[in-house]
Image (tube, rainbow, N blue to C red):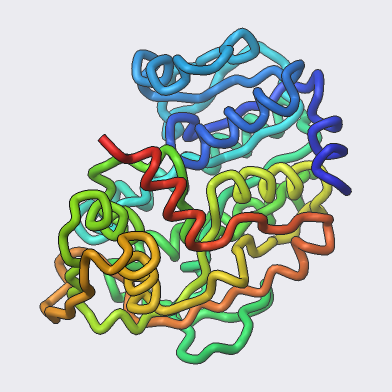
Amino acid sequence: MSLAEVFKEIESRTLFISGATGLIGSTLIRTISKNAPSAKIIAFVRDEVKAKQIFQDIDCSNISFFKGDVRSPICIEAPIDYIIHAASETSSKAFIDTPVQVIEIAIAGTKNMLELACQKNVKGFVYLSSMEIYGTPHNDDKIFETHGTDLDTMNVRTSYPESKRLCESLCTAYASERNVPTKVVRLTQTFGPGVQYNDGRIFAELSRCAIEGRDIVLRTKGETKRSYLYTLDAATAILTVLTKGKPGEAYNAANEDSYCSIYEMAQLVAQEIAQNRIQVKIEESDISRFGYAQTLHMNLDTSKLNNLGWQATTDLKSMFEKTIQSMHP
């Protein structure tokens, strides 16, 4: 299925999107509004004023805002054809500081969204999961959707990946027992325009260093390796799975060509983005208080998603260029 066919499928449909003001949720809404202008979007938000500010630069005639909290039952009269559940805690520090809330948002939120899907008899439901459900692979072997995990439930930081795993199981249960056409997208680390200047993740810190002209200081040796994904590519991946994916299945989403270590990525920013005006320094320290994941090699295989007709289009250097352009004060 081509992207044109994906957008044609959702034309004149109603999509309910949680986490609508987040990085991925807002990119989804912008992408749909531009490419399927007759689609109706119900944006599930906690703060309607904030939402209207975020989308003030686009035509919102096809967007309505539904205010609420995913942890509470969702009551809405409008018909809904598709649901994308993008609401989630994404702060690494929250994973260790407020793990109960992280789990509560994930489990209660996903259950309420699945109940809504049952009520509306939707054509498709996508849950946004994470590469972190695979734990901490230790070599560069490809990670397929059938890969196991080594997550330790006695480590408080697993509040995030383990709750994601349980939410995937909830999706599977609703697909099996209640015939909800659930699909799961396991995203790698995703960034692009819309990243907030004070975002705490590594791609944002590297971008700030390039903007401010200061050296990049890594608190580890930067040995963790993973692939990355541009926000627009993530949006098209999600919509492809929504319309074409098989119910009860999971799909990895990443740009496989971007696979590199954090140190290599930092060098790319210093040398190619900042044109060697800054350097990469390593000053190791205790990072446990920040909630960072252990050193891992997350080399996601995306052939299952590619077989649906999707391809990543934006390389790592371009991801940074576009992100920095949007972040620049």
